[in-house]
Length: 482
Image (cartoon, rainbow, N blue to C red; front, side, top):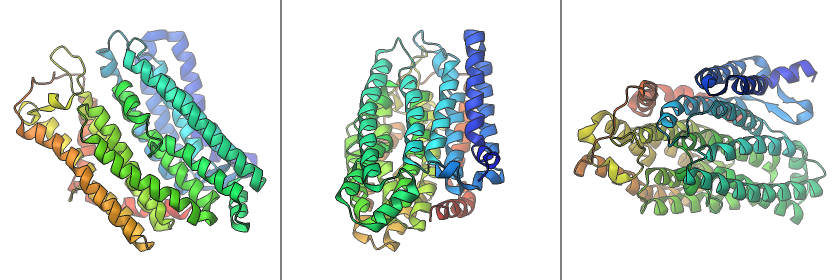
C-alpha cells in the first residue's frame, strides 16, 4: 500500500501528534496565561482527530507493512478514547483552581493529547513493537499526570508507585514479546498467529502468558491490579477520571486484538488465563470495595470488577463476544466518567475536596439533583435494570453462554450480585443517613453539570434509543478482527 494511503490511515495520530507539539510550543512561549487557550484548543484537536476517523482511509486495513491496522475496531475504540480525554480536559480547570497551590498548567492538556496518541497506536497495533511504542507513549504521559500536583504528597506518591510498577509490567511484557519473537521468528500479529497455528510450542505458550500479564497490568486486572486503588486515590480527580476511562478502553481493546488476531489459534491456552483473571477481578473487586470509605478507592475497585466482566466477553472468543466487550466499554465509560463528575462536586464549605463516603450522607436533601445523578450511575454500575449497565452485563453473559461457557457465566453473575452491595451502600448513605454538611455550590461548574446530565440521560431508559445503533456499530467493529 502506498505511503499516501498509509499516512491518511494514521491521520488521527498525526493530528494528535502535531497538535500536541504545537501546543507544547505555545505553552512554553505563553506560560501560565496560555492555559485556558491551550485547554480549549486541545479539545478541538481531539475533535479533529475524531473527524479524521470518518474518512475511508480509517478503514484501509493493514498499512506500513502490517505495523498499523486501520479498521472499524480501532475506530470504535478511538471514539471512546477521544471523548473521555476531552471530558478529562474540560473538568480540570475548576479542580485545580481550588488546589493547594498547584494551579492547572498548560502542560496538562498536552500530556492528555500525547497519551491519546499513544492509545491510538495501541488499539491500531498490528505488530508487537507498535504495541509497545504506543503503550509506552501512553504510560510516560500517565506517570507525569498522576503526580501532576507536585506539592501534594499523595499525588507524588501515586506517580512514583505507578512508575515503578509500570516499569515492572513493561519488563514482563517485553520478556513475553521476546519469547514470542524467538519462537515465531516475527513480531507481526499475522506471523505470530501462523506460528501458534502451526505447532504447540512451550516457548510460545510462555510468551503468551507473559504478554497477557503485561497487558493485564494496563487493564488493572487481578493479580496485576495492585497499583489501581492507590493511584486512583492519590492522583488529582480529573486525572483519575482519565485513568478510569480512556486508558482502560485502550488496554482492553489492545488485549482483545492481541488475543484474537495474534493468538487466535491458541484460544484454548489464553482462555484459561482469561477465566482466572476475569473471575478473580470480579470477586476481588467486589469484596475489596465493601470496606472502603474513600469514594475514589471504591471506584477503583469497581473498575477492577468491571474489567472482569469485560473479560467474560473476551473468553467467548467469538465475534459476539468481542462485540459485547465493545458495547460494555461504551456504557462503562459513560457510567464511570459520570460517577467521577459527581466526585468532582464534593467540596466542603471552604472549597476543599472531600472524598469520604460519609460526606455523601443525606445528599438527597442537600443537593437532590446530584444525588439523583449518582444513584443512576451506581444502579447502572451494579447492573440493575432498566439502566444500560444491565444490558452491558447481559451482553457479555449471553456471549459466554452462546460459546458454551455456562458455568463461567453463572460464576460471573454470582460475582455481580456480590458487587451490588457496595453500590447500594452508597445509595443508602445518600438517601437514608442524616445529612452531612452541604457541599459548596460553584457557579463555574456548568460544563461539568451539563456533561453529567447528558451521561445520566444516556444511562437511563432514554438511552435505550441508542442501544440498537450501538449494538450494530459494535458488531461491525468486532467483525473487523475475524
